[in-house]
Length: 200
Image 1 (cartoon, rainbow, N blue to C red):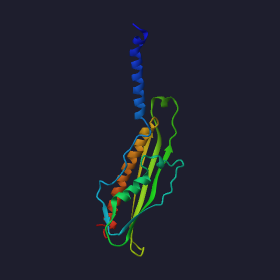
Image 2: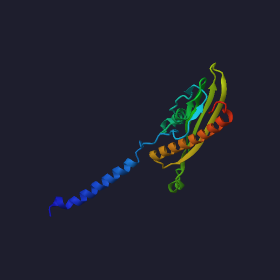
Image 3: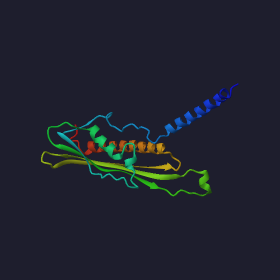
Image 4: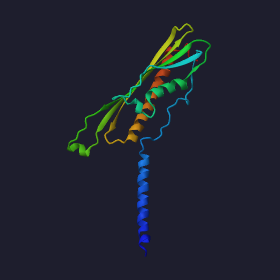
């Protein structure tokens, strides 16, 4: 039997192993796509105003320990999307202003035990504190405030020392989703309690 023919099964097996390895690497890509966080599936909040304004008073901070800018959907972008998707003008005068007050994620690094015990256990290496808050106010045609509410949500999450970058980004995305669900619920409650005159 020719030498090349005898080696063919081995080459095929090696090629298959390389393809499987590359495929496994692809699933761990840190650039995996994430869905956007939207609120279009929820009913709109119709206000007795002629105009809706959205303002952001949070300065972008990319220096440690701030990590919100690394999230698949940043806390600030999620808040802005809430205002765009949920608030609608449905009146003939006045303005509603939605203002982003806080949108941040802080990373706290834990000291990892490097002794013998660490060989057999996986420790928590980082803690993430994510906070969002915003206000909603109604101004009359003279710029006088007629109603005002605020909502705030905060979540903490620790991660294990052996987490992959893809796994970390999945956790960041999940934190933002849960955080915005809490923010949405509090904002709805406050509108029903303190802004009934302007909510249709």
